[in-house]
Amino acid sequence: MRTDSTAGVEGKTTTTVAMDFGRISLRSDLVLYLFGTPGQQRFWFMWDELAIGALGAVVLADTRRLADSFPAIDYFERRQIPFIVALNVFDGSRRYETEDVRLALDLDPDLPIIMCDARSKDSAKEVLITLVEHVLVTASEEPLSGIA
Image (cartoon, rainbow, N blue to C red):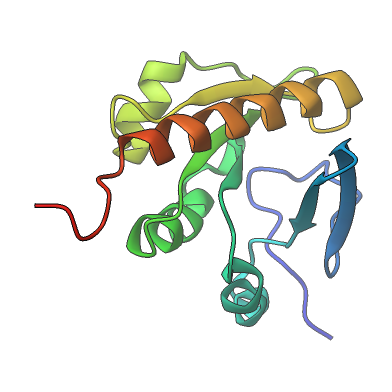
């Protein structure tokens, strides 16, 4: 049996153990598919399959273990998949300014960072809206291929 490190989150009692999936119909012809994977290295084999055709991603960061976010950030940067960072805040956890987190994670100045509570439907909705807006802005900035 394999046990994940609880360093920094000793009081944590639940976790995602495999993969989450969701589907949101924005319009009759526009559907947002959501895939959630754990960040532990043993689950990385899923990331390549899920990233095929992905328009964007959310890196859900826990400020108690911020360094655990580096592999996901590196993954999306290397594949040039637009992403945002959502700082998952919990009752009683220390709060950091987003610019301090940006510096700690070495993120570009235009990359959105948003505070959230992943347990809250309204908060999760704001994260997804921020992601979609970022994807649209990123897509509009890309040069058209084949035009010199």
